[in-house]
Image (cartoon, rainbow, N blue to C red):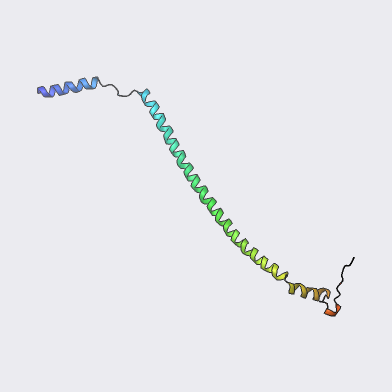
Length: 118
């Protein structure tokens, strides 16, 4: 073998024999724990974001249903007010009074004015 090959082989053997680990296993424990905690925190945060989005969509749908019910109730309220004004109109009350209990408007000659004189 040539001198160069012998030197390279001896250098490799010396290097392999003197190889020490760069980081001790005890030094890897803390970063590994921190990494695991961060991964768990990220997963939990992602799950909470998903839950918040689901709650928002559900509440928004409930809100839309309530708005639709509100609109329907407003329409019904308007119809009831119209019906009340129809049933409570003067001509309706007068016609019911005449037909049911025989009431009639007095003739002008039947009207007497009474004054309270003390």
